[in-house]
Structure formats: structure tokens, C-alpha cells
Image 1 (cartoon, helix red, strand yellow):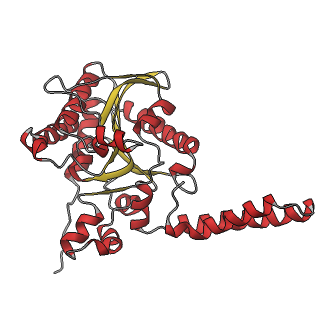
Image 2 (cartoon, rainbow, N blue to C red; image 1 turned 90 degrees about the horizontal axis):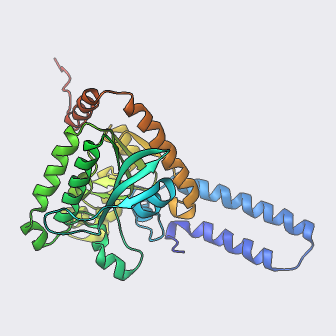
Length: 319
């Protein structure tokens, strides 16, 4: 498994544990030493993962072993039926969606999907959706509204597909249409950022009643690499850029840009799929019950009011 530089102290203790387990010594003394090392390992993990920088969280969000949308769908939902195509031009594998059952309730699930291999990533454009992907999402959301089904979206993208063909086929219009639809749709919408949340590529399926983020994820109008290249003319300042951008869940929750944080197990979502799925399922269940208690008009009013207030500053009377 890929380990990051900041995890070096954890790796060193894990290696000591493996070596101790492999040698033959007095069982009683061996257990005492193992317990000491395991406690040290736990304390070290807690210390490291409770003090992660913005750039370190960006790194974890991109870990190749993190669960992707399809993993959440198969673990949290039942009877998933994937629907394809935008009924205009084609199907985009970078966005998947369809009807599924959540706690015996029928819902619409939509999300970005990256690939596990180079070939699959090429097929899915590394999770960067094309106009067809956003139009497919638009079609599925309208279908959910027609049958009064809640919408759950999973966001994990480095951005919308940055190609001349995508621009020619109207990717800006496709994302804009989704934003307009999601602001006024009359069914509950919950969005969860499970990895990267970059720019309009994320926003195209993230305008929701409840926008939640996993601990080790990020959301911003641009990646730290691009921010560094613009401000410092080099990628060498990504750590400083990530800190200045305030892109972590803690910063965004404090700024009231997101509505909550879903905790990941120690070591990140990739270290314990099962616990991650349980935490996400609990968050969806809790928020879905609250949203269904509101009338469609109240949900729409609260949703529009939330997004209209983003970035609003109240000036204090200095006289």
C-alpha cells in the first residue's frame, strides 16, 4: 500500500512489530513488548492524523486505494440499477448513476467515478466528466424528481474535462444547467465529497440541501498545484498554496460553505473501508430523515438561501 512521507514514523513502528512477531522469544515478554509497540503505534497515528496540513489532506484524498463512488454504492445501497446516456450524444463513464435502495427507500445515486488501473482511468477520464456526463446527471435528477425520489451524489474529481472538444460540446452550459436544476429541484439532495472536489467539475453535482465532506478531502475552485503555478510561477509552493486556500473540511465548515464533516477511520478511508461506509451511511440516513420532514417549498427556500449567502460579508459600522 502507498504510504506518504508524513507516515514514516508509523511505518517504522509497524516494521518493528512485524520483526518482533517473527522472532521466537519468551511469549510473555513478547506480548508485553508487542502491547507497548501497538500502543505507541496508535498514539503516533492519532498524533499524525489529528494534525494534518491542508496539503497532506489533499494527498490522502488522492490515495489510489481510497473507496470510489462504485464502492459506496455497492456497500451502502441495495439493488443498484445503473442508467446510461444523456439521450443527446452519448454516455460518459466518468459519471455513473441510477436507482438504488437505501434502507428500503428508493433513491437516485449519482457520482464521479475514477479508475483503478491506467486503462480504466483512460476510459473514465480520471473522473473528469464531459458535457455528456453532466447531461446524464441532469437527466437522472429530473427522473428522480418525476418519481419523488431523493438524490444522493458523490463528488471525487480533479475538475471537469479540460479539452477543446468538451468546450465545443458545451461543458459550461451543461454544468450551469445542473446548478440551475439543483437549486430548484423539489426532492431532497445530499452531496458527499469523498475525495477531490475541484472547481465547477465538483459543483456540477454538488448543489444540494446538505453538502458533506469526509475528513481527508478538499474542495476549492482550483487545485493547489494550479494555484501555486499562478501565484509563484512554479509547482514548488503547493503546501503553502493549500494552506492559504483554506480547502479542508474544517475551514469550509467554519466558513459555512459545507454543512458537516463525516469522520474517517484512523489512517484514512483507504485503511478501513467498512468503518468509512458505516459512517457515510449514518450521515445519509440522519440527513435524509430531516430533509423529508420539510415541504418541497421549504427545502428549496433553505437551499437557495444557503447558496445566496455564500461569500456575503456584513460591514460593521465603524462610526
